Image (cartoon, rainbow, N blue to C red; front, side):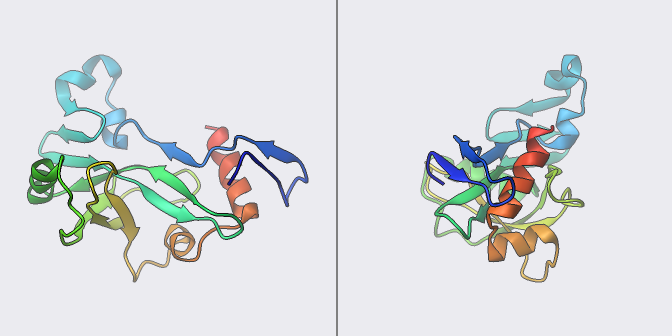
Length: 166
């Protein structure tokens, strides 16, 4: 979005605006008390296992309509074991020719009520990029609609207000 823009909501110029929001861990793992977390779950920046559950860190992009680029939600997806295993096999390779995999959003996105647990399609990419998340075509939630249609400055400003309050 450039170095700054004049907000159509407040009329002020904003510089260096956040264009992504990332989660360190899936919500259920983050909820484990910090002193116990490393004992109960195995995780790094991209992969997580908790009990018999597996998670992959991904990016859910929502395009801007009034400027180039996207707002990227760095969220985790809960996946089945075959998807997790295949991602580990392809971790340093180009996975763009792989078929999409299914999963569930493992983080609550504060700008989108009810987003936790939303079914997603996971698209592996080249090793320099985390997998991409897409909402299912039949999903009519605000998140799905925003991902398909994009967001203007007003919605972007609203999202910034929500996440900066966290």
